Length: 238
Image (cartoon, rainbow, N blue to C red; front, top):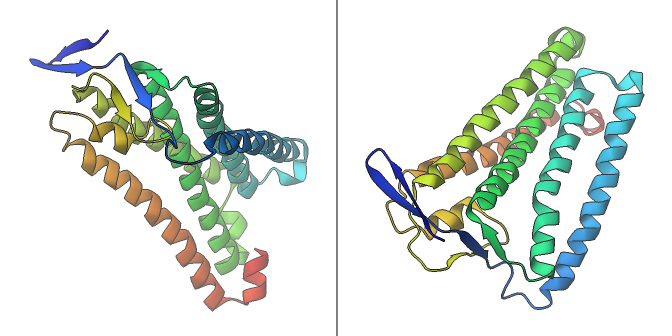
């Protein structure tokens, strides 16, 4: 049943469910979803092995491997937030998802995506300091410093993604069947099917995606800069 929410003298119509289209125009899509099951199994084994190794080997209890551990956690949780639910949805033709479940799924998928990007940025920072300032590396990049950086990243990611998802609740969906043209509750396709003003949502979404792209560019730029300053072989090993 469609719900009407009243907030600050304004009413917003929320659908009871969304319909996730998935790869509806892709032939033999079910084989792809089965392949995702294999990918998820490899993700669990690989990340569990990395986390277990770092936890058990005291020699790896360093600032760099704190970030690597965090990356493995983010990757494992991000895959868990996305793959099992949607593989079950498409393999067994259960493509309706409740409004609340859709927003929860959107939050966790985008949150762990943001965490992976931030963690890669932290690892890039670690490598730049290790290569450009090798004698001061252990004074600059300590375990405390890395844990503080990662803590700030978690708080910032929670804040940004919560704001991103919270703005969805201020949208009205007029269609009798709210169809999301994506394989999960993606932010962009969801706000496109709203029938009221969604202009406030787009700048935040664009800024979030721009941030992801800029972080990737920064990582590549720092690596290229280091390669120019130092021996290429040494840089690649690092």
